[in-house]
Length: 631
Image (cartoon, rainbow, N blue to C red):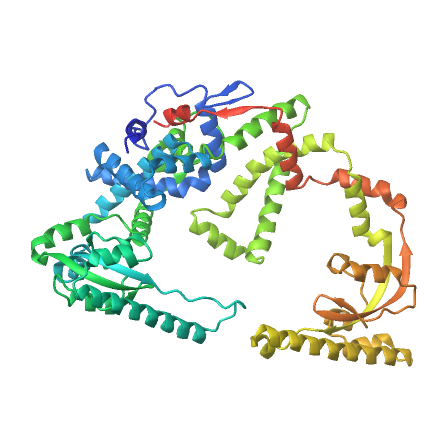
């Protein structure tokens, strides 16, 4: 990874930042971390904005890193720069090898495609490496290593019983063709797999006989093997027992060096294995080494979570009001941890590293909006912003938590948040949005399509207010039919449609004979809401749910007229028009226009406006300056 050296120096510089509770050394931070229309925004200004907007949401992650790092420093377990660099190199190598087949240039192209600056990415990896190494060091002091863990790692590394095999593999894939219909039952698939496996076993038995008769097994691998590289390489390879079935491993480890296995099934293939060599290791010779490795291993998710929870429980954390001030004073205390003041700079450094690039466009937008709004004499009202925040939070509770406030609060608590913090965050964004709303309202013109849409929402299609009633019968199939194959379901649906059509024809005949529509609706309609009202539809039908052909038919009815049975979704319906009133657009146009002008712009309108506004402005984030300020 030759090109990583200089970038790792940058990551190393980042990691030389002072402890989270230390005061700023007085070194100057960049004056141009972000420029908007050529005007520079200093690092401190951008970082202060980030702390105000994202500081509370980011607080739990910050505290976890802060407490782990300080616990490691107190115990003199903090890793050195060499260990951090080595971890970063290993993480990148694993990513490049695993996802990009060892092609570092392809990995860098992927970063570029995703808009990720390599230096920023490396700095993030370095900080995560420091945290991971500190957590592992802390856990290693108290972690108990069980004999079973040592034995498991021993067999994974040195093979079953300490026998590390080197072998050649001749694999043939077991392929089951899917029928043209696309339909195959589990039992049919099992039979097809068994037949395909038996065919491969027969082929491999013939090849094994040729090898036992004197043909070179490596030549047979070259000629006949199919599938991944591990199944087709004629040169001997170390055998990794992971993910192979137990029965295959039992058969393989029963063989001596030089032997060729019978056909063995595993991992979607049937294979012949030739044992070329083996290396034997005694458990006792490596037990201490494996125990030390296990005790010093990285924390898994459960261990890390328990460590963070313990440190948070033991710590005394006070969030100070300055956290939400938006100040650019980096030395001002925003937290107090175990009686020690934590300056804004400490939180800002991590925020800039993790969210500085992602939030830059929002910051640039707000800078432009603030300037344009000031020129237009528009200000945002903090009280209105708080009301909007309350409304948005209540809407989210209703939509995502079914109105259960306590469930929402529990979700927040799992993130280290509470109701007040959620409202503060939303209010901060609402203050900026209100400036956009003011600019939009000032420039707003009513779109004729919006006007027409609101007119039809208030009345009905073409301004028609219809008083209707209905009788509804369901076309849905019973549950037992839904378990049949598709052809049977289609036939059952045809029969069901015939039955329901006949039922509604009979209803029509009864209506023609003089029976009361309302009484029949109460007796027969399967739409319970309208049936209880004698089929009446207060406020008219839900026009947006009706097919176009049904809408057109209803609009063509005259008072007293009844429709033929009409399909709506999975129902068949008869409608009767009681009365019709037409409201021309011109008669309520001014009222509707005023309503549209008074409405708060939608999120989509706000997004469109910002996109158009930013087309006339330029901004740029300076990654090196962003990172330099985080040192």
